Length: 114
Image 1: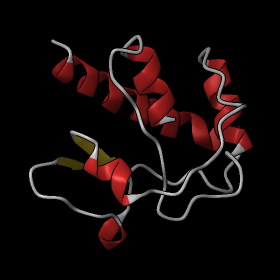
Image 2 (image 1 turned 180 degrees about the vertical axis):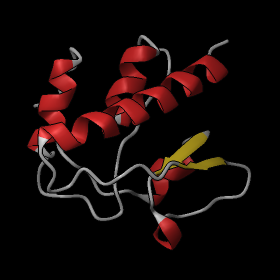
Image 3 (image 1 turned 30 degrees about the horizontal axis):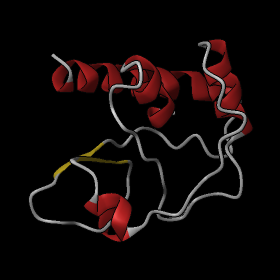
């Protein structure tokens, strides 16, 4: 959800990479539905494994409850956002998570693209 919002709210001005340390086999259907309600189609997205190269090539790394499993490189900016986990949740439970993530992304975009 964060990657989809970042791409959309930055009008593509920010290059976005999205990956997880232990990605699911598919994107959570409730997250897809919640994002569709906000006009963003994530139905074609495929979860990807986080690689060292993805982190190395990034200026800002946003983790979501990654803990010690995410690689850390000196000189990178790291933020750990820890919203509730939408896994296994229905769309009613995912909406507030979506809204928290959207707010965080809006603030990040405003900071990165003044």
